[in-house]
Image 1 (cartoon, rainbow, N blue to C red):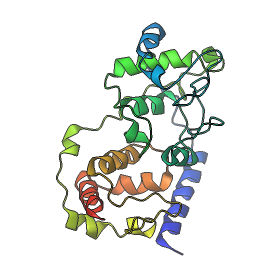
Image 2 (tube, rainbow, N blue to C red):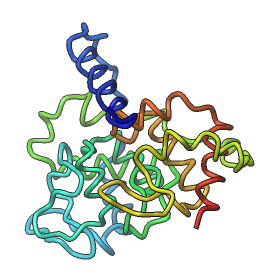
Image 3 (cartoon, helix red, strand yellow):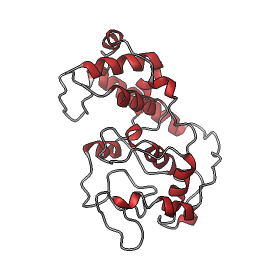
Image 4 (spheres, rainbow, N blue to C red):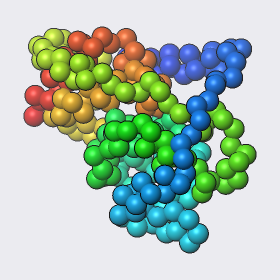
Length: 241
């Protein structure tokens, strides 16, 4: 049995244990923003997206019924490979994931084609999400948990991004990564991380660590790594050709 297969089995086993464990109790929800303010802010989004009666796909997919929708699943829209993979890994559009995506699309989906630098204001994001919620099926019936709970803990500390990783240390740590990824950059159903920009690598790994990105194996691996170890791996893979 390969190391990668063993990791997958271990992760799935953990998921089964959690599934039958007693619930920890309901999660308190944060109040969403002002949909009227969100409608004004959405003017920026209209360059690519449409919402409302008769909305169709444009440069980006329409956003009617976005809550609870699997990423990359709007019919007849040509998504990036990264977004399709994210959906296959379990990414569903909720207030949590939409908030992370609006803040920094690459923190949630690597190499997304969404040409948007991000919306840094948490208040503005909350307004936009409140506006979009009005175009979901029966929005008043959406419970104040998934998919309308507002995330509060996904911001990456800027101090983490300035850590200078040791590529030699990263090479030492990379053995586990190489059980699934290829140093040559080959992509055989598993995305290449060779030559990946250091900052993108760090943001993605911390998104797995905080379980913003949905992939049980990567969440488990990232969860074991320190900030310095992630920085080292990022430096090593960025330098590979």
